[in-house]
Length: 625
Image 1: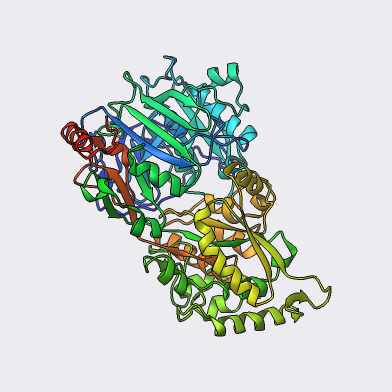
Image 2: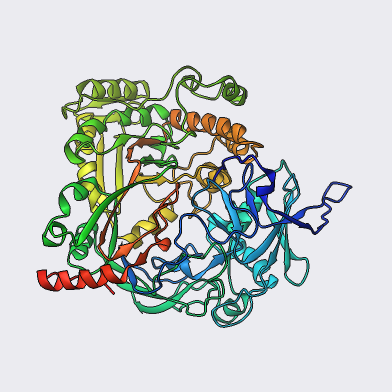
């Protein structure tokens, strides 16, 4: 899912002693591969064989203390792999994968449960050798049977996401006492598949044989990871404790990480309540996604006295897309002119100025803030990919750079609404008695915007006012997390606020976002329901790109088509992560390039003691360990 920087020396790719594995598909000659300690999507890897730890960790970080965070809503399950149930925050920390990604390379993976990787140059298969010391938290060894069973369980019984994501993984087979072989579908080579398999969560077959894989309940599962479930307060909080004899503590990808003795998640009704709880010391750290709260909500003695720190941490990487997303399964949204017209009713400039203190940049790509974002007119290489679909694509794909509608930020977007009405008339609508109706049927244009967070009500309300000026009967409805998830899984909505987080190496997940099979699969991430031959073909080009250059070209072409299909009304992004925390933490001086690794942070005993003393003196209710 993440592309890679090319390094000059092939030796850094970490080739070890040759250990041939032979696989016969349709080819007559067997293919051989060497054992490697790591694999990159394109090019070489940063860390050589025998590396001790990632550069962005402190290998001498002290262990101890706690990290408490918040979540909004509720939970009723400790099984994050099913479509049913609301899984508890943080539950993924119980489980591990064969490989682990580094956060200072776009897409490179190093051995975790697996000590080595084998794949031929064409990546038509992959084999992993498990570490002999890998153990489940009940002391049982992690086995090849666990790996084979995990693939089968996830594809046959797990969330639809896994069926789509592992669609080209035909089987996992034992190939030795500690070696497992994954066979891929015979088709154009998919270079990402070995890395995708490396990311797959490995589950304990012996435990699920006893307890059942398809149960969405609160029975604490056994994992192989650095934490286990300590306490569950159903729907209200969950705590995990560090495994003292964790088998993987000295594996290079883990050194300097997982420093907290306890991880805790407290649940709140909404973000406003959660913020007040944070300022009262009920939890330790908060990633702030609301500009208004960041600008005006962090007040009080704890902030003034420096007991709470605020930081904007800049990272590199694609910011993806967030926006009002149309459900194309609804008849009123099948005409792209309708979708385009409604975008003219959203006044981003006024919203950004009035509600967000000018903090955001308008999204103009599904891969904003990265080299993957399309811009200007398509290059010759992009046109070559787009040309076979010229007759089916909007002509603007070839002739214009996409730009969302712009206003003067006055809050009175008259020209935009005029243009919206023109497009709606072209789509067969007219105004009758202040209502916009279909000329042929007389049916009004009516839809609901479904929300899960009250924070978006203040963004949606002005949008609804502009829609009403057009005669559109649009409403908004905010529901609880459980109902929201169920309605999304059933595609039971008209418009939602959706987001597509993107990596620097897009790949197979794009099928789940935009593929026709996913559009028909309840619980998939194809929320818009788009099913388009050009998009499917371009997703294939992204997945099968042979080089970084080919990948960027294919993503640019896909981005252009998605934008001009008007599947969403683009929102905004910010190229920093806003973090507020009680001043008991420390972190490495050399942070990762592509994100924030909280597992590389730690509690500084001196800061924790000073915070307790200051909190007691100020009467603050800080609760650092």
